[in-house]
Image 1 (spheres, rainbow, N blue to C red):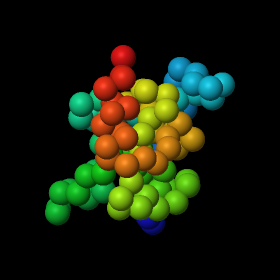
Image 2 (image 1 turned 180 degrees about the vertical axis):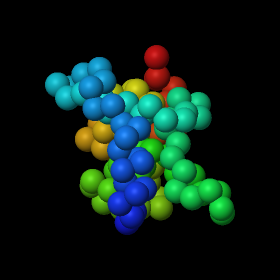
Image 3 (image 1 turned 60 degrees about the horizontal axis):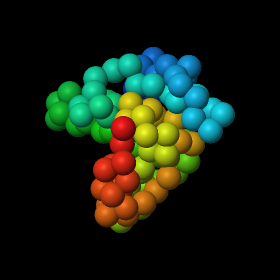
Image 4 (image 1 turned 120 degrees about the horizontal axis):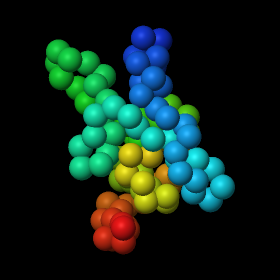
Amino acid sequence: MHLNDTLLQRFWAKVNKNGPLWNGTPCWLWTGGLNHGYGRFALSQKPRVRILAHRLTYELLIGPIPTTLEPDHLCRVRSCVNPYHLHLVSHRENTLAGKTLT
């Protein structure tokens, strides 16, 4: 996914890279708006287009997310947008993993 410089600056201004540690690396906490604990970012206002912040960092820093998969938080911190704390799983696997959130 490609974003212009203004959107990128606005996006990264909402990321705190000093969150709790998971596996020796910090969570990158989303400081913008949340929905059910997950960060949301507005790509545009008209038309209104929103994206989950952790999906955006994954696509920006790792690559595209196949349509058959979704990112799962290994760290179990929903507001974490560190793409290295995510792994891609099926919807079923993600749903089952979500039942173990504390």
